[in-house]
Length: 415
Image 1 (cartoon, rainbow, N blue to C red):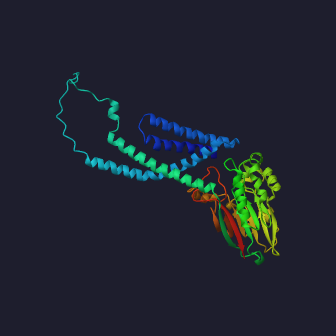
Image 2: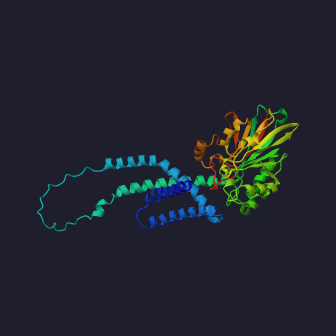
Image 3: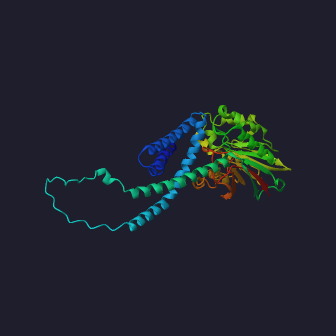
């Protein structure tokens, strides 16, 4: 169903772009045909990109396809926003032209024609198609509005995507966050978590992407590293080399991982990545918890599987991860999706660390994400549980982030 909706949306978007950017800016002729062919080729590149990624084929076409997807998205958004001012300007221009038009001359008295009489000498009947052709003034106004709108939308869309690519492919920002937990043992005051999610190792990321993230995390000198899901978009065979820098992660009490929904997209499921991460020194918390002992006090660190694993019998089990805890001890839960806080609240969790949303990644998607998740980014309280959602250090699909730069969060607990 999702695929059908997506394909239908892409086809409608391309038809709308043809209507506004090709038909609305050109007259019949070679230029219109060339622009139509260009738009059709871009659609073919986009289709090839999605087929290639689903079949595990990595190639240059993925870059072209995903960048065009982002440009297409912003072209549609900007053109749709311009529809109202376009209509207003068109109405104003038509009224000005109508007010300046000379009054029509009175028609000569009608002369009765004899049935079957031949036309007068020298008289030429106007072809029907010329009679139906729009006046030159109407055509010039239409082209002016179409070209002006297309120019504004094109410059705005390309500029936005260029900015978004610079953000997505650049260094993540370090986001320091101090969170007060009422039940936290004072001896745990200042315990620091380096939180990262949605790294999305895939066909558009090189090993330098992972090396940079590891280097930045190590520079934080955190007590705990928490990788909150969506590490990869593919199999170990394809992407294992991109994950190897994770073996160099440094922290006082270790690095921990919980699955995200993308770990379940691979045909093999998340098991092979769980094993691979174990060899790299990253421990996976699969509906379980560990004790973080710091300065003579203990914190429960729990992790649950993503809800995406439920269909394969590998979903979250909060009772298993959180049951039987020592009363009065603070608990930090790693759960990929913020929406999992509803069940976390029933088990007395103090703080949930999540990702998944990318902060919307490409505005205005942040508004759409907010309809499905209780928190899009940052710190909030839901059902009495504090939830911190990091925007993620990578990107999914287009290498573009607008209004939601990549980040690595440094969460410091306060009593």
